[in-house]
Length: 254
Image (cartoon, one colour):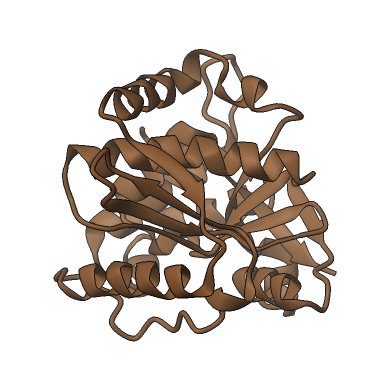
């Protein structure tokens, strides 16, 4: 997608401000230059600021419990610039999971979920503390084996959250672990990690996003926010999110 910060008369084919923001982040990640990117591309940087200011904005009021604190930690800090331009990738959830999986844009999701079920992949909630600890240890062991592993990640808060979900292979092997705090209509994609690599894990990611959506809808949640800022995501992961319906919006903490 060509990124152009110039104003233009809109047509049905014109990219939206959100489209342009996402395209700029793709360029930022591909360049691998970090903050120098802004100095070397001043026009794109100015266009990014202009488009961020035009994004829809949500106001979030996190509670004081563990889930509310996790939500607050996932959102932009309450500073003047963040109040104006702070943003995250958010999935707006409809009233039913049938509405979520419907439509042309969810064809890949539906196809991957069918493949997962054909492979015998199932899922279940994880409620026992000892099972939670075992699964988290397996997930962290796998992450430490990867070249780009987040070796300093602090997951000590996960045990305080209620919604733990695991995807299981037909032979009982764990394929993916998800921990999702939720608070007053909002939830955080706090932990969503494959355990191992291969077609099963790939298909399990789609299945579990559908499961997460269904579980949150049943709990009255209407917005799921990614804890990682969009420009820090690998481009492949951001593409995965967009196929699932995540979009970049401004988020303000009240």
